[in-house]
Length: 246
Image (tube, rainbow, N blue to C red; front, side, top):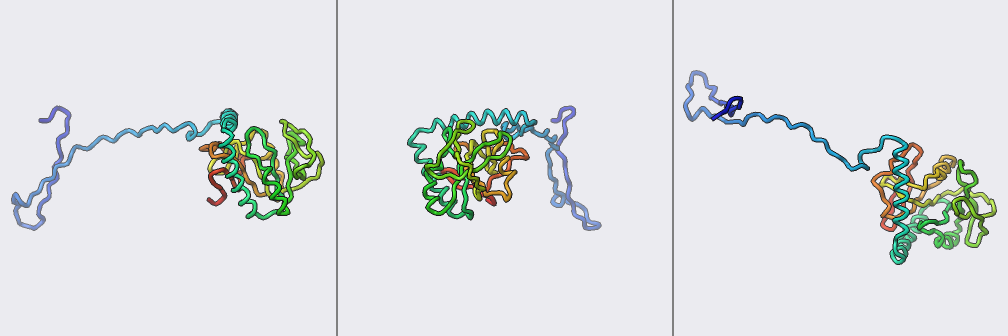
């Protein structure tokens, strides 16, 4: 029994099309179709904050500042034995990559605040006739200056407590190895926010091959890259090598 305003089932009749022939019960099939359904309104899918994007440079800057603080605390909290195993795995991957890359001169970095220490690799690189350099920040608004370095080189204090070679023997590295506070799968680097690395790349001609070194625990969904954030050529962690065209 149908109430007021209810639609009943619709009937579709199929009959023989032979001229002059009557329709018997067996030749008249009736199919019952349900009433038409009202279309459901589109659902709003709430995505996690990191998938929604951010609306302003200020918002991105605040997010990056908070992420730097969190990720640095995370790597400083790694127990010594775990750190030793992790760094040994990075060392193996990094050395294998550097052996395969063309270019004689390599820009390293002086490790701070729980970063991977690339200095143990230095002696083996020197044995391969590679030239090594460390960065010096000579202009807070300019690019880094890479100075020739080897173990035992006399150092001088630099900004943020990071030492640099005292002698200004300038080298233009073919390969730059840079530490990562964080990174994403597109090989964008989250650094300390000073802009030194971005300015160094922008000023370099030709552009050196760039290798970021970091830890899997600091992988982010995105760093919300800005126009000045150039993707690195390679990223080495304890778990894998990420590279362009992958």
